[in-house]
Length: 257
Image (cartoon, rainbow, N blue to C red; front, side):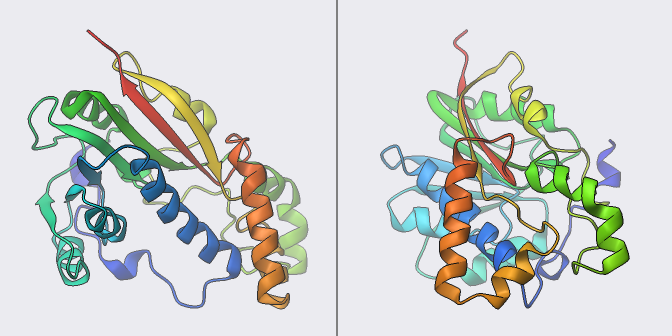
């Protein structure tokens, strides 16, 4: 897909909404926590978040001692990052993921959190990530899974849901690819990302059944403590079954030579 067809100046209101149901609110928090925890498995070094958005994860990592870089094509989002970073020191870089302005083997971690399916060329980004990461560094990619359990069951039950108005997303099914995505993410796609430059070290799933018909509304009606326990239980199931999960987190290592 040509770069001119990609939105490179999106704004905060393009993907933020008020009044989220508990399942989607949990998913957003869990992806953020998972990104920070996975990066922080190693001692502090240098980390870049590509497609960084508001850079909340980088602010947390900077407070842990990481040297952090936010890369985003949107000047608006980099401005939001500057406003929100507080005491954290984050270097802001306006660039696209397919052309990273860093030297070869210069970074300990390259992360891309739930943004890769907005890029013009996912393989070009992975090539760039492999180029700029150190030989012992890591590339961490989280990707929406449109073949997870929620999407598979949603497709099956969609006619019933539309007829019954069972769910607020009946007119926009959870398994339908949004128009601003450049490809459909799933477990098979994740496994093919590294090609010849990166080796998949491990992968895990985040969240289960997010936006499945009726699930969020059921959680909303339950006591908050019970709803959160159910969400954490579903998340634990998803962790070891990335093909079922709502989001897949993959960790890659450079292939020597």
